[in-house]
Length: 131
Image 1 (cartoon, one colour):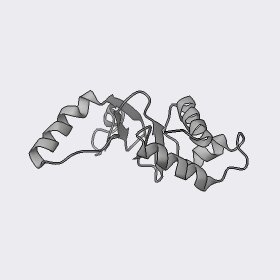
Image 2 (image 1 turned 180 degrees about the horizontal axis):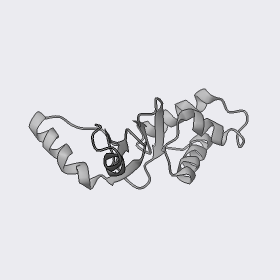
Image 3 (image 1 turned 45 degrees about the horizontal axis):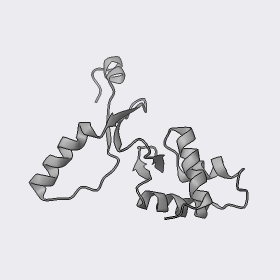
């Protein structure tokens, strides 16, 4: 399947940023290169990239869906609800969990980007009594 120029620029932007960006942030990053581009075109292109498995869409707890390039394979995140720190964990660390769930419940998991919310070690140490 041919990748459109908008999709290619989105891939380049997500690759350059190495972070999670909202559709608005992606639009703002590429708007100077393609000034005639509108926000809905970016959103539709992001959705196509997600459907093709090139980009993940996640809720990182900040109120907006964020997109990330999946060029380094599947991975997952731990997100601290106190300080917002994001820790990337490899797919192999959750693969066994997915297998257990799939076997026990006869359920095919299609999640490609698991986000687990909690409290990081630093925040736990700073305030041991809070949850």
